[in-house]
Image (spheres, rainbow, N blue to C red):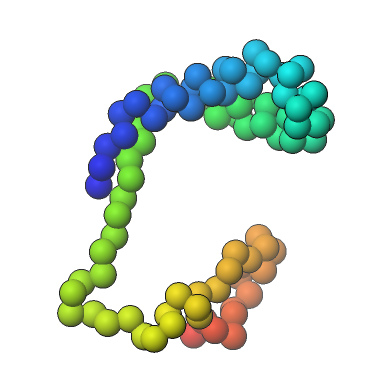
Amino acid sequence: MDERPDEPALWERLYRLWIAHADELRCELGETQTRNMLHEAHRVLPTMPGRRAVVLTLRRPATTRAAPHAAATMTGPRAPEDRNVPDERTPP
């Protein structure tokens, strides 16, 4: 696990810039994208104080071998309403 102590401040600054430059964002990105970005900024900014950022890297033990083409068999993202429905590739 690697600490990223500067990352929360980076995001806080970015969110504050989005809010301060909302009109410019609308001109460059359009209303929908700007609305989504501002919604995220207003939702996340209050949670920034005390936020901790880390990167967690998992490694497969050297004695474990992946099946051929294992990555090709991974499932993609599923819609929220389908997450509790068993996938034919996922054993029950």
